[in-house]
Amino acid sequence: MEIPIRLPFWNNLTRRIKKATWHDQRIDWSGYLFLLPFFIPFLTFTVVAIIFGAYIAFTDWSIMGAPQWVGLANFMEAFKDEWVLKAFTNIFKYGLIIVPGVTILGLIFATYVNKRWALSGVVRAAFYSPNVVSATVIGLVWVWILDTQYGLVNKYLGMLGIPNIPWLTSTHWSLIGVSIASIWWDLGFSFVLFLAALQEIPHELHEAAAIDGANGVQSFWYINLPILRPTISMVVTLQIIATMRIFSQVYMMTNGGPAGSSVSVIHYIYTTAIVRFHLGYAAAVSLMLFVFILIVTFIQQRLLRERV
Amino acid sequence: MKTSNGLRHIFHKRNIKPRDIPVWILGITIAVLWIAPFVWMVSTSLKPANEVMTRDIEWFPRHVTLDNYKKVFSNYPVARWAWNSLVVTTTSTALGVLFGAMAGYALARLNFPGKNIFFAILIASLMIPTEMTIIPMFVGFLKVGLSNSYIALILPAIANVFSVYIFRQFFLGLPAELEDAASIDGASRFGIFWRIALPLARAPIIATTILLFTLNWNSFLWPLLIIFDDNMKTMPVGIAAFTPVVGTHTQLEGFGVAMAGVTLLSLPSLLIFFLLQRYFIEGISQTGIKG
Image (cartoon, rainbow over all chains, first blue to last red; front, top):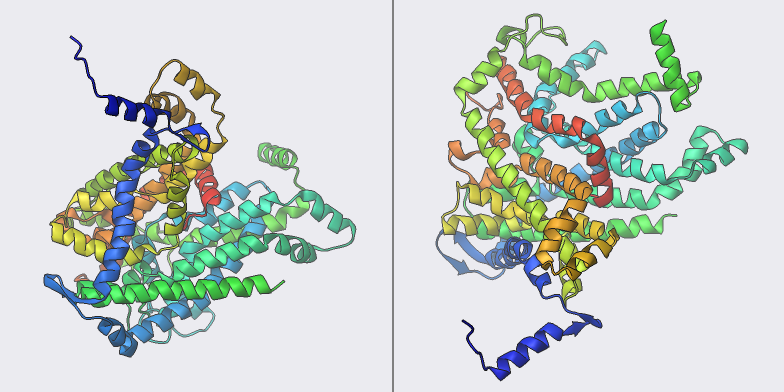
C-alpha cells in the first residue's frame, strides 16, 4: 500500500539536493558518510584533544575536583623550573648526536647497497630491521649491551685497553648511551628514504663522470649529494621532530637519570602527569614543546635552504 | 665445484665483476655487525642463568636451555599480554585500514563541497606532535572511566592520517571506468566501493596493514599511561618491566629472562618484516612515515 505524500516543500528540497552541483558536477552526498567513521575519531583525538589540552595548560588540575583557571601561572613556573631547562637542553643535545648520526650513517649504508649485488637484498633487510621492533626491545637489549661490567661494548673496548665506561649510570655518559641505541633503532627510516632517492638517479650520470675520470668519492660528492639535497632536508627535518619527542628509549634505559642527565621533555611531562598528577603543568610543558619544535624546524629549514 | 658454478651464475645474473668481492665482504661484515645485537639477544635468552654474565664474550651458549622462557611464562601473565596486544593491534589495524580506505576513496573520487578543506586539515594535523594530545586524552579517558580498557587502546589508534593518504593517492591513480559501469547498473556508492574499488586496492591494503600493524604492535607511551591493571597491559609495556636494573631480580639472572621476553616480543615484527620486506620499504618510501 502506497501512502500518498503531498509535501511540495519537501519534494522540492530533495529534488534540489539531488541536483545540486559543485565545481560543475553533481554533488555526491555519500562522500560525507564515507568520511564519517574516520573523521569522528580524528576530530576527537586530534582537534578536540588539542583544544582541550590548551585549556588544561592554563589551569591547575590534579584530576580530583574541578580545574582551576590560573592564567599563565604554569608557564611562569615552567620558565623557572630547572628540570624544564634541563629537559629542553637535553633534547637539543640528543638532536646534535642522533640527527647527524642517523643522516650520515643512513646515507652511507644506502649508497653502499644502492647497486645490486649478490646479497644486497639481505644486507638491506639487515640495515632496516631494528626499525621494526618496539622500544622495549631496543631498551632492554641495549641496557644489556652497554652494561658497565658485563656488556659487550665494554668487553670489546677492554680488549683495546680502554677502561669500562659507565654508559648508562654516569651523568657524563647516559645521554650518549641512549643516543647510540636510538641511532641503531632509527637508522632504518633514513636509510630507506635515501635508498629510494638513490634508485631514481640515472645510472648514465655516473658512467659519464667515470669516463671523465671521476673516482667513486668524487662522483658521490658531485652527483649524488646535490640530487639528494631535498631528501637530506626531509630526513633531517623528520628526524629532528622525532628526536625532540624522544621518550621510550629514555624511559627504558635510564628513566631520565642519573640526576636527570638523560631526561627528555616528554619524559618530564610523563612523570609530571603520572607520578605527581600535575596535569595543568604537564599540558603547559607539552605546549612549550610544540612551540619549540616549530621554531627548531623553521630555523633548520632556513639553514638547509641557504646552503648550496 | 657446484658452489662455484652457483656463484658464477649469481655473478653473471646480476652482472657483477669479481673485483667487487672485497666491497661485498665489507658490506656483509657491516650488516652482520648491525644485527649482532639481535644475535646477542637470542643467544643470551638461551643461556642458563649462571652462564649469562661471563668473563669472556661467549657468542653462543655453552648449554642451550629454555629455562628463561619458562620463567617468563610462569612469573608473568605474558600469554595474557600477548592476547591483549593481539586483540588491540588487529582491531585497530583492521578499522584503521577500512576507515582510511573509505576516507581516501571519498577524497579521491567523490565530488562534494569541503573535501579539499578536509584534506588540508589532515595534512596540517601531521605537523602536530602526538604527544601534545596525550595529556588531554589521558584526562578524557580517565574522566569517562575508560582507563584499563581495550576501548582506550583501540579508539585513538583507528584514525590514521597516513592510511587515508596512501589510499587517496592510490584511488587518484586508478581509472574510474570500471566503477562507472557499475554505477550505470544501479549499484550504490558503497556497493561500488566495497565490491569494485576495494578489491582492486590490494597493494595499498597490504602496505597500510603492515605499517599500521607494526605501529600499533609497538605502541608504547599511550598504553603505558592509560593501563594500570597488570592484566590489561600490552606486551611491550608488560615486558618493559623486565628491566633487571631496577627490578626485583638479581642482575645476574635478570638479563637471561629479559632477553627471553624481548625475543618473544620482537618475533612477530621481525617475522612479518622478513616475509613482507618489499611492501615495508615501498610503503615507507612512499609516505615518509616515522614510526
